[in-house]
Image (cartoon, rainbow, N blue to C red; front, side):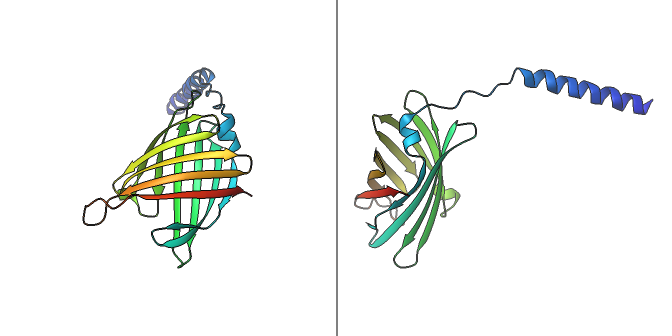
Length: 172
């Protein structure tokens, strides 16, 4: 009798799972010519950040059925400092987007992003416990230019002077 009950439960589970999954179609991948132009690996020209020269390698790709855009950043400082970050953006067909960024500084430095896009430019605003940033990224063929402004809070809790920089990246 126990074997029959197990068999009935197994058959019912398989039927329920199959019936449920037939109505579950994932949405079509997000369509964005701008985001598609950002796919690939990009390497920055050296730029100054907090008194040292940095060079970035940024790899970007669509993930999870084209519903999210993944950005992986690996930076090297001239003094041996290594930095890594992972940003997951959720773009919409209308050009708006939200996202979350994680980096080597852990859960206390998680950033949240909102943004829009128009033409060949993405306009992002980010916030975290360390402060805020604006980042405007323009793609022109195999060159991406990022104009960035950081408004950071020091360890003493006071606002530091804004840091502005232009980062030029070349597609590998």
